[in-house]
Amino acid sequence: MYKHVVFWKIKEEVNGVSKNEIVAEVMQKLKALPAVIPEIKEYEVAENIGDYGASFFDVCLISVFENKDTFWNYTKYPEHDVVVEFI
Image (cartoon, rainbow, N blue to C red):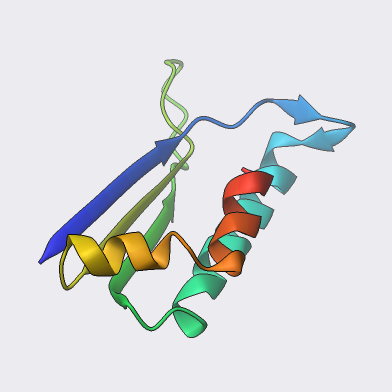
């Protein structure tokens, strides 16, 4: 089993689009990947909704693959590249 864990900090605003809107789109794009990438065994996407007055990450992803090779296969899908480019 190979786990891949990623955390993202989202900018407050990009080209007039608010952080909340960007986070929602990131979440939507990430959640769509398991339907098109069979190498994904488990996939969890979460948004940090806490407001603690400190600097935390905004979105996280925990994904599970059979092994490192299947993880690297996952990274070669065009759908994966589209999400990475957006983020």
